[in-house]
Amino acid sequence: MAKVEHTSDARVLVGIDISKHRHEVLIAIPGKTRRRRLTITNSIDDFARLITILREYGLPVRIGFEATGNYHRVLMYHLGVAGFDLKLVSSVALARTREALHNSWDKNDPKDAQVILHMLQIGAVQIFQDPMVVGTNDIQELSKTHDAVSRSKTELWHRILTHYLPLYFPEADRFHRSSRTDWFLAFLEMFPSPHMISAMTKEEFTTTAWEVVGRKVEKSLLLSDIYETAKVSAGLPVAPDSDAVRMFRMMLAEGRSLIRQRNAIEDRAVELLGERPDYQLLRTIPGIGPINAMTILAETGDLRRFHHHRQFLKFCGMDLATVQSGMFRGRSKISKYGNARLRRTLWLAGQTAVLKKANSFRDKFERYIAQDRHNPDLRRKAYTAIAAKMARTIHAVIKSGEPYRPFFEGTSPGGRTSLSKGRGGA
Image: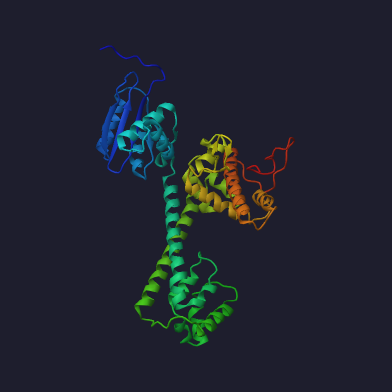
């Protein structure tokens, strides 16, 4: 058989459809019209078998896949370590391309592998960075665990405010100020029912609760107010040893445990990232605290891989999309086809930034809503614009390696916004 000659840019293309237990593999070899199909299980032996097969071709290998939960992570780590070029395929783009190629809504794993291979051939793929390889796995786990703990704590906090307090101590709601503090839950754990307070003298109650409420200004007045409120409370007269009180205390103990876990994660995040230049640069931007900075670094990896801020905006799903057909042109909206956790972080950071003084975010927000400050739709659009500006600022600060300067942007000749007095553009 004659030996096939390959051009210098020839490469083996591989489309892989990921699933929980097995993966469908379709291989296109240069110079051959017939494609090779494989089915491999999610095991180290089959990973090694696939790597051996791909290496036998003696050509560069490019592999495309669609991220599916976390099931792709282990396989892609082994393929990446083996030296293959890995490319990510957008789930939305995959679905649209499948419909266009097959003129059908029908979906199955071999067909998806074929569509992924086609998208590799036309270059409709994205950059993939393996967290284990680029060193962001620990940051990602800290960020995701913090998010899970925060959501659990918020859910439990809402249950306390909407179920337990209305039943047993409805007047206590006005004494809490922040869900981040532990003292209020510790106080309720000690006194879940106002009748337990009113059964004591004011002096006995003050002495018992003094250390529980923490370091408060005017602590005596606070405890006196709580005592007088408990005396006239409308809460249900449950017995201190009742199952209802036991369940209430169980929820309170869980809430305090979640607060401790969240605080431990935040302390570890500062310890892990505190000396990193990118983290320090992000912290100079208004609205970005330790957790927002950690989430940005966890979800984006190296921001310098985005050559232009529009690429970063698209990665976040903050790029504008417009429906247009013939003479009709719809309103431009953010696409939301991107990283949802990043969009949420940018939105929260933007809301915090506009509350601070002397920065370009607040200046832009005030100019945006000046026409009608109380219009909720206009304010929502303004917050969206601030979130997009936050993304541009983050990209500019990391790319330039210079900290954010909290002054309003000037206007350069020709009417364009200058970054000489600030970062991120107007």
